[in-house]
Image (tube, rainbow, N blue to C red):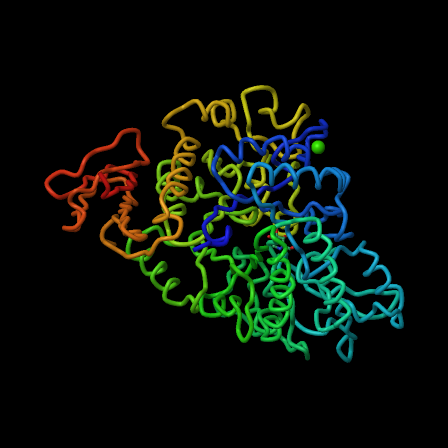
Length: 534
Ligand code: NOJ
Ligand code: CA
């Protein structure tokens, strides 16, 4: 049986501005990623997803694209990209790009044309509406970055819709010409050999045709961010979006037969589970993996985690492959959310659950959120609603590679500050330490590779009580047990009868303790993987 790489593999997210700078401008670049492919292959991941690298005014650091088929000079050239792709493939690594279809930059030629006059052929490529009678925006929709989602264009006398910054006008995905142009974009990169895409805000693409007001949110509190004043009932997750996902899937699948392996589509979707599942496909296949972000916000208790995992597994449609995420470039880092000791247990959870894990760069070092000094804030999210803890700079700081100046990230001061603990928390230092977070990740990734039970096997719960979460992974004859202590007190885990011969393979702590008297004593913040083989 051949299993597609996106099922058995582990995806690693790279925020390109912060991975490795090679030309001394303090900003990471494509050559930097190429330089570090050896590190990634040795780490043991299978694919990289690179946040946007296209030409962009960088109002939202690349999520405002002004040319979908180029490379921003800050990151390099198309030739640099081709080189990165070829060298990644030579290392056995797949490469996913970030596709940003919901909106362009306001500097994209399409928008410049659209804005130029009401009769321009591209007018209907974006969402233009008249003011309501008496004046004012067409409805009450709010930008995800705060403030009204409608921007008045004085010259042409209409409003345009932007779900994010006003520099990110939303495209009109009901227009077939937009769909065709975006299919061409996908083809451009697929023809170059990319292995797939992470699709930005997939659930936003279609809005209710008549633009009704969104209902107000009874649970709104200002500290949540202004966007939460209303529920995005009419501005997101409309049924027609599934037809668009199916078109993208059909295109990607057409490349499956090229002999280069399957191309994968991952949808960024923040929705409750029942609605998330529809993105696997309604009448036709949708994306391969609708991102499952539940662990990012989960209550860290055995019972609630078990309920979350069981609920997700039960909701998966026939043939739908699961996936798990612990962190990304938009949310607080796991080491900050859970603390250093428990972040090791979280890593074991991420890499032993059933489904494709996505690992965020730096999490393998236990990198925490970095405090950004006043005056150094870069993220528009923070600048627009300061002080609410919504800013994303703290989780986008440079990768610390070694103890040399600027942590080996750059020869110049980096665009965001380094983690204060970089003299110790860096790749070179941690690679040499047997007990480091980095070494733990290498071991976990090596175990996943060696044991199909972890990469592909079935999943069954063994225990979810007190602070113990334990489960079984099995594939063919092989059975593994994973036992996690989610708290800071020793816990006794009674081994199931069939597993009394179990032998620890890996602990999140330095040494292994055997099963004794039918039980495993889990030390504080300890996770253990046990095998039943001799
Ligand atoms: C989701 C991306 O992850 C985020 O970083 C970005 O700001 C918005 N989409 C807008 O593209
Ligand atoms: Ca650079």
